[in-house]
Image (tube, rainbow, N blue to C red; front, side, top):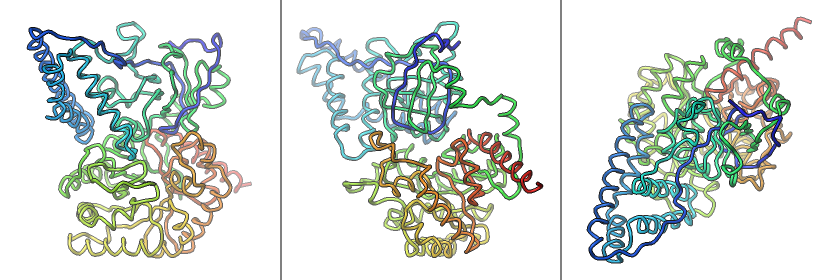
Length: 555
């Protein structure tokens, strides 16, 4: 039961938005022992064999744990997600690391806990100092491995602080508050039933943050010492759009920020038909997202983020692996259209296993369409996998981060050539471009002549239009979806689409923000794609908009 906020002081915290959305509910604290300090002990020669055995035993048990977790995750979530834990197992058993620990025990005669702590701390520090954001986030994996080994040796484990108590719900229908959002948390709770997530640490590129975004769970990070302020059962409200968290908000504030919607209204909205002339699709990153889109009767998948498969697997997927996965996606949608965005690499989605050159500013570097055209082996394998699907289903292929018509011409030509070599069915394939860069928006008419449809990626478009890093809380005030300059650009895109008689949709996070659907419809964007969880809410707004316009028309 949530504590009565009216009897406790309101506290407000500013953090970093991981996933947009607004939720409120009882807090559930998840704690993992951080082992911030470990006692250093000097061992005698007689104690060394037993200490080495303790380490070897912990290494063996933890490896078995990670294998079992990976097996369960592969079965319940997906193989790509399971790779996270298999990767941790490989790092844990790395020959160099294991030898350093054995040496620290046998030659330096120090206790296993201290040596484990020291060795992994040094590796974690190295990762944290790397220029590549994605590699910096991998420091969290090193920290998880260290914690797992030390937990085993001290007989502790990650847990809910209220575990064992009658009111404990293990995160179900709760807002999770934790020190850090880790991949291991996936095993301890059903993420799909979590209302929201608030953490002290963890960036936008961590594995678990990616999974939270793919599930559409509102999440805020970067709130220092939040674990010291919140107790299990406290009322907590988070605004993932602004990165703000409220502790013990009064009921009137909750009603103002999150207008109440009854369960019946929510369920009914999920079953309503999208008004004629409009389209409401879902964004997806996994089969589970697709299944949820079907559950909420989405009109299709407006954006399937193929790069998430590679990111979770931490390796390149070959043509056959991709074809098998994409076939599952198409089958799950039961004939409804699926738009596959090709590998969108760079910025906040680097792939470290590609060993790309270090870039001073990856957001302005080797990413999106540039990367695809400059990586023919990777590009062609993905194109072949998708085009083979056209033999049995209609698909849409969407190119990310297109900068101008000349670049789109090269991309379109590659599709045409692959249709011939892979034996695809041209009539079942539509080609699209994402409008995320101002230069592409300024040349929209020329680009529309080369494609079948356009899709607005509002997240990056806002970022590049206003030269603002959307993941930097210091400048987040300038990341403004309501700025009139943005809306002028959107209107110009609508005009270009109408002039060339091509479709235009929007798949960025702003499409799912409360009240924005009506504004988009007003300027002529009738196709929206949002997180599966937001489909009922946005459809309800679209239905309300259509009814209002009908009443005005009748009058």
